[in-house]
Amino acid sequence: MTILIVDDSQDSRLLIKTFLNKAGFDDVTPLESPFQAFDLLGLENSGEALNVDLILMDVLMPDLDGIEACRRIKAADHLKDIPLIMITAKTEDSTLDEAFNAGAMDYITKPISKVVLLARIRSALALKGEMDRRKDREAKLLETTRQLEAANAKLKEQSNLDGLTGIANRRRFDEYINLEWKRACRRGEPLSLIMIDIDHFKAYNDNYGHLAGDDCLKQVAGALRQGVNRPADLLVRYGGEEFAVILPETHPDGAAGLAETFRSIVELLGIPHDHSPILDKVTVSVGVATCYPDQSSELQGLVARADQALYRAKEAGRNRVEIDNV
Figure (tube, rainbow, N blue to C red):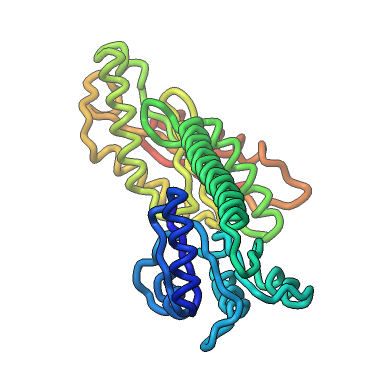
């Protein structure tokens, strides 16, 4: 326990220190001026502040009275919880009221009684200990809350990711496209959707095995991810061998150009597919649709149109992009 004694009287400092030392309080620092206390407490400089558990402050001192010194100490955030006991020969109500208003928690009258001094000090230190324990519990609770929030955020993030490819999953697709649809309705902006399907993926799985199929999906997802440059655009594993890309604020021409980029970037991967009737490598078919949502339109219409465009790409020979022209 670190206790500061601030009193301009050497006799008073010595008397109080003697009482405290004999009572088992060894860490006692006598000071003759409030400014010495300010320095130790970190008010007068930017150095490391002394960790203090209790301050005993005389009221009447020549350079600065104890009440004003108390007020300055209590104004500092890092010192406001340190108990401060005033030592005074003045017991008028006005003086005591001023001391308590300045932040003092108690007072001791002169001449000093050893019994009263030790009783008041033990009471103040007990209160300080309880306050420290409470702050420690609050800090631990805040840290636990922070960790829990971080864990929940991580769980939410993981729940929105496809376990195999690491990109967003169908759950995230539903959540995000609904959000962007409402935003497009409010702002009168276009919303585009690209649907992508790996050509003859069943034949790939049947002939190369499911482990190779999983690796193929991961490679395709990685290639498609390279084509998504805007933070608002979302690449999703829509299901099985099918992917989708949500493109907010994207007009038909921009969506069509990006769709062709996706098609070519997968072909350039050069993943061998000797059992495809199209090429001897993995390819994709792509469907594109754009909508300018309003209160009379429905989100499912956009999804259906992109899916129909994808179907036409497959019917027309695959490894191609078809655009919804409605």
